[in-house]
Image 1: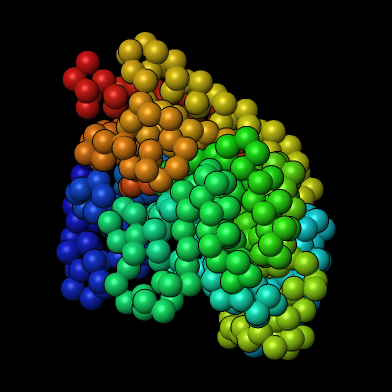
Image 2 (image 1 turned 90 degrees about the vertical axis):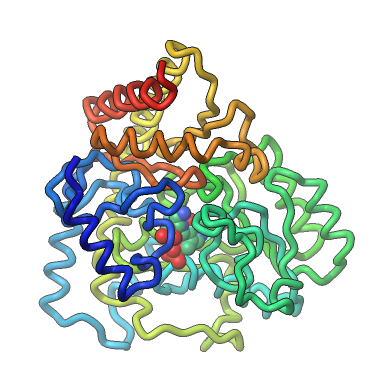
Length: 431
Ligand code: KE4
């Protein structure tokens, strides 16, 4: 496959941009080789600068749940830009999207728009600290909540990919206020809580983890966290930047029947434009400036163009619940196809899946937390990634990521992915 234009662009990019990319995981460091530069996308396809077509499973790391260049969202954005781009003043669409989010996610009584998932999670723990008057937070090893200092402790996603789960530049003071526990380990959480009585402001987690690869909550885990937070006056924050509006209309919290105190959102909420949000109980959110004393602000928060995209996306998902049943069918079709191939080839790699999220781990251990995710053979994953890429399937370039399906994938696309998976496994294992 000719990727010479991408290669020359990457050469040039590295002269001006750290690592040649504006977000580390894009650099293919974990899988080797030179990243492909995307020129355009439509539906289930992305096209690189050399004209190669790929069926894609990244979907911009989650936002493109309806596929790329969705006609409705494109029209909403092109209509909105006729009226300029940004005012730094309140606009109608911000009220409309807030009202819609509150109706779609019952635990959210008030919501604040920001520009990224990182801003959402940073702000959520700040308001939790302000509301409780406490300093410490609990996060889980392998969970990723963006690049805010408090979260770059045992972080997942790109931080795990590059072996910097504890990034330089994060001060000891900040690190001391972040306690970590293994995902799915309730007793470890109880231990931290007992050892830090009345000091823990918030507990934050991805209810279904995407950022150590896809890892599901064990039976009773989420309920146990809710109980502990209720007993201890700890703010339970579900980071649904990835799962929000993906695992159901109301996100993972609706699917698993858990009511958090705060929720963070991103990705799908912007329809591909830079949007994040945090929201939850009014008694907590009313601590956010200017209603309350916890300061948080943003020049482009609620940007009218981004709101046009996000509002169109959320309205569509709200009015077409069949999107979720379609994604369940697609996810099951893909995973059953992968499992059939593994059976045929006598393999037993772990395949974690829920709805339109999945990860094939190159380990035969059940993957239930970060340490078991790290038992995967990363070299083999790198070979698999390139074998799939060479067959026109564009996956996330890291073992510690979830793949995402969109409604633009037909059965034929899914069957093509299944066939490419089987051929790729045979190639890299020489079977
Ligand atoms: P952003 O700041 O990247 O918009 O969101 C941070 C974030 C917060 N919470 C969760 C659960 C997330 O998954 C993310 C970002 N996800 C990664 C993908 N694993 C973004 C991809 C990247 O870093 O380039």
